[in-house]
Image (cartoon, rainbow, N blue to C red):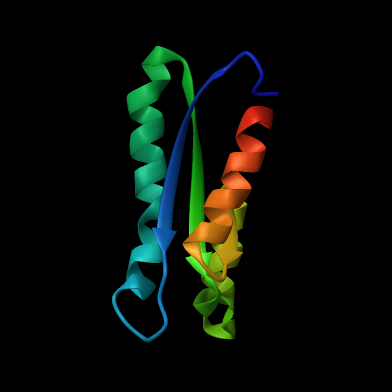
Length: 96
């Protein structure tokens, strides 16, 4: 599907272990995705949006937000640490 297509991958990480402002920032991805898609469309570049979130976001209070994000084709990783994600990314980059 993406093999012969130019791709811009936007990776945003949010690691949190207490209540705070990151809760609200999760909901801004829609505008960012729209803005980057608009910017890269004339160049025939597709935009793929990734979120790397800490396990904090597995709480039930985030269920609706995560469900909405997944419907807008945002790829979400819930990880214990950023290093786990980086190790995973190194393994999959050759396949993207």
